[in-house]
Length: 169
Image (cartoon, rainbow, N blue to C red; front, side, top):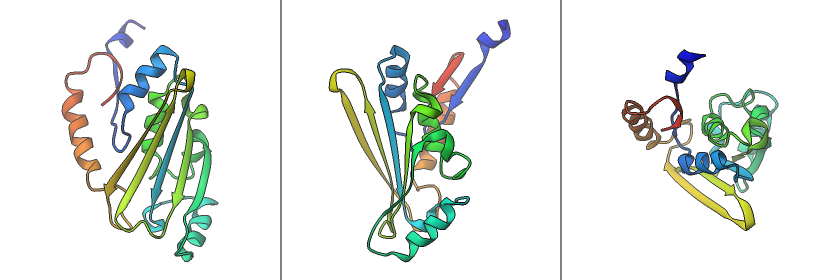
């Protein structure tokens, strides 16, 4: 146990915008809800059944977006292992809600040919709400948007100076 006080868990923010603020709310016990919505072109998802089949059907419809999944992050993880890191990072930041209390929404949109869009909605007490939208340049078929790589590089640089504990960086 004594050695554990010198350990760090570093969670790269990646496409998860506002993670430090969400972690602060969770630390104070005032984070009431967190929803993370990821919208991409169907070819940018790498999914397991049954989401794989839903996504293939969505790719045939060129005019409308399809919600592939809405529910706890924990259930999404094995179904979208290559696309869930943003939501898993959110569940870690929102530790008072965790993987069962954070809501994930995965949206497949054939019209999403230039962007990956991640929307984060945090809800606190007394009607407090913050919603962010992150539009990351990305071509169809790529899993990770172009600017997320810079976020990962910044996470590596920032992690050098973090003390023991769990950190979104």
